[in-house]
Amino acid sequence: MSHFEVRSYDGAGRVGELTVPRADLTVETPALLPVVNPHVQGVPPSALAERFGAQILITNSYILHGSDDLREPALEQGVHELLDFPGAIMTDSGSFQLAEYGEIDVTTREIIEFQQEIGTDIATPVDIPTPPDVPRGQAAEEQETTQERLETAAAMDTGEMLVSAPIQGSTYPDLREEAARAAAKTDLDVHPIGAVVPLMNEYRYAELVEVVAATKRGLDEDAPVHLFGAGHPMMFALAAALGCDLFDSAAYALYARDDRCLTVHGTEHLEDLTELPCACSVCEDHTPADLREAEESRRHRLLAEHNLSVSFGEMRRVRDAIRRGNLLELVEARARGHPRMLDGYRALLDHAAQLEATDPVSKDAFFYLSADSPRRPEVLRHHERLARLDVAGDLLVGGGEVERSFDGYWRLVPPFGPVPPALSDVYPLTAQLPERLDTSAYEAAARGVAALVEANPELSVTLLHDGWPATALSALPEDVTVRRTDGTR
Ligand SMILES: [Zn+2]
Image (cartoon, rainbow, N blue to C red; front, side, top):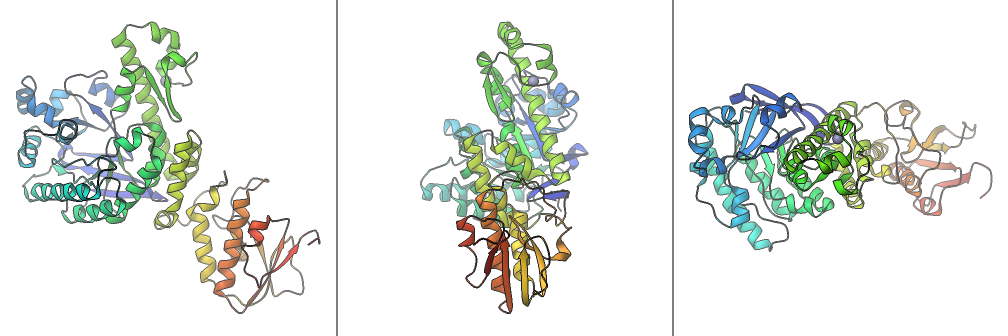
């Protein structure tokens, strides 16, 4: 039975509801799970819920399991009371420690049982987090071990507790896709995409996009996807646009301990700031100098609070953008924060067809924002639609008015191309365009003309343009007659 329901889509991004039966709670997604260290809590979990609206957090059952101080209290009181958190609690299993130290002393069976005993709402088996760039043979072999452990977990009676099925496969998209297919067959509940933190730390967003897109291809459409270790708000929109539903953040605390502030555009070091470019309550009440002079633990707490405000704020913005149908505009804006984010956005657009599959047919407005906008799924969809139309006769495309010698007249709207009169007032052809378009917009429009002409051999097209660049004109099929609106050639 699926515990996840999508409420609305934008591209492959979705707002959904994850039902967590053991917590008797429905988590609205995309959701951010703050990482809570059971030993050190800079910001108490109760404050995460009350002040920042966290519905779910993630902590580490392996640390609880191995702790002389916390193991018994966790078993006696349960993890919710131990952490004093009213929402849902997901627990990790020690895989991170396995990756860091090479070995751990629990099995999947033991740690799943322990997670069940402490009252975990979403448990995790001990998967093998294969890092990026390892030899393919290693990635494939470790993936097999991970899959065996998922099957072990799936065979256990875990009652109402949800169990996650992490997906590994290093930086090999085909292995990720295969791993996802195998994980989907286990019928486990949530799918974390594992071992991508090194990619994010090294700003390898384009490769991250390939990994996530491949994983998504292997999963069922309605499977909830968790991007493990994704805690920097600058990439929430990008990952959500690929269809990631859960994110977890240790970044808010780790960066704070390093005196760094997260923003939606990147990271700022406290020592470099003369003003705080943020409107959260910490930034309203303090100057960078106040923070620098504050006692260390207070400074780290305040920075962590700022980081949480920014992170939860961005997650709300992402959900709202999905509901309003302008998530890709948000991704595009974020892509302008860092050149590597731009690479990530461009890699995302390589998968426009994958995004198009769930993209709603109608939204509020298409905003053309850059030379990358012509590669959006809405443009691709229009071209596919042109290729399905059945048209014949002499058609004038472009120019301001109908000319009598033609059988029909269609508007010409870059980057979409020819617009059948019936679609003129229909999304996305009501797009808001800048007056100064990019070459890529005309080239995309030419692809639209080509799609229409190639699908209709009985059609003769005359294109009236207002000075298209040569690269766009040369992309037109040869049998299209081309004229300029001002009569020049
Ligand atoms: Zn702030």
